[in-house]
Length: 212
Image (cartoon, rainbow, N blue to C red; front, side, top):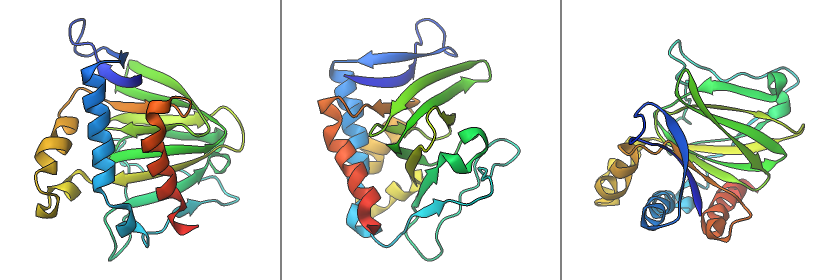
C-alpha cells in the first residue's frame, strides 16, 4: 500500500488529506515515480558528487522572499543536485519551510523525522519517517522537516522537470513527467518496512553510495 499526499476534491479542492491507494491508481503513480527515477540513469551521475553540509555553525536553507529555495547546481556538470544533511547542523534540527520547481527525492539515513507538507498556510500534513524510509516531493510543493531524534541524517536529490524534456528521453516527458507534474498528488512516502517499496528504496541507496 502506498501512502500518497493528495487532495480530496470531492470535499474541498483546497483541503489536503492522506489517501491510501491500494488499487490501480496507486500502482500507476508508483510506477510513474519508479520509472522517472530509473530514467535518470544512475551511472551518468557518478561524478556529480554529494554536497555534504556539516559544520560547527548552524546551517540554513537559502530561500527567496517567496520561500523558494535557491538551488546551486554544479558547474559544467549534470543538472542534478545531491546533498546529505546532518540535522544537528541546523538550528533546532529543523529545515525551514520552502519549495522548489524540481522533483525531489529523499532517503532518511539515520534517526527519525517529522516531515510536513503544506497545501496552503492553514493546511499542513505531518508524516513520521524512520531510518530507511524514502519519499518523493512534487514540484512547487511547500515542505519542511525536523528531527525527532538527535543525529538524524538525510540524503536528498533534486531533478529539474525540464531535464526530462530532452529528445533522448523519447516520450517520457509526456507520458511520465507531465502526469505527475499536473496531478493533484503532493508527493509519496515509501516506508522501508513495506515490501512493495523495496525496489525504489534500493535505487535510492545505490544513488547515495555512488561516491563511497
